[in-house]
Image (cartoon, rainbow, N blue to C red; front, side, top):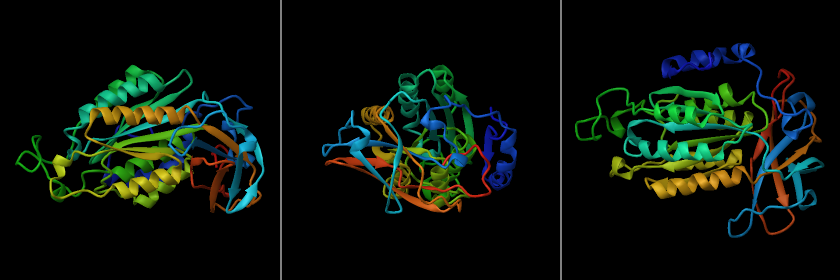
Length: 343
């Protein structure tokens, strides 16, 4: 377990941890490094922006085997010169799995564990790493970075429904809390923030976060904009598998899908609606696996070389009738940044 990310983080401790996290991070073990000439190892002080992206045709199918001259890239509307290009699918992947274990997920959590563990077993390769976080009224690190699929499965199996009060049973029937009287039951935005800053920010190369949730946040200290910004600064693609047990909500309904869609679009990932169907969840994981293994990579040195910490919009265009799935932008380094991060 990481000493910077306690096994259990309650909302009351979150602000304190955030306040000391940057100073404490210097004590961490060095992050995994690739080969010195790999495009994924460029750091802030080299001032190279690296963009991973997928290309799809009008039917939504992935398009492989395109070449460097097939693409143009723009920053804040200004064309940039492509310095590095790769269409390889075997670059190391760092992956975070975030599991919603709040009361609303009680009926679907076993399915998430089963299908999620199978996905990790199939997708991880020798140089890949993954971790597992559970979130409800707490944010728990269930399994730290590892390549061992059995350890990751065990981590996922440690996720337990926790509503922060009351026993088990069917919500709303006297056995547990219901959505409108459980005001601090789902620290979704806090979990995204911490996974980004504490686990992924110092890693290099291809990074992705897969969140299994209905998208509802209740009680986070962080706002959705904080979660989005943290993921962008960590340069992590976010996929949300929107898993909603509609029987739990009944007539209340839920509305977390809009925020989750924006989070995914801004980071180059995608939101996939699953509902509570096993086959749809399996299909969603398969789609994510295919996208993660079918990415292009462009690296460029920005014509705007100011180290001002500002947000820069990035747009990748393909020469042809293709659709690009890429992050919407990045935060430029600032003069206060230490070497070791990545734009």
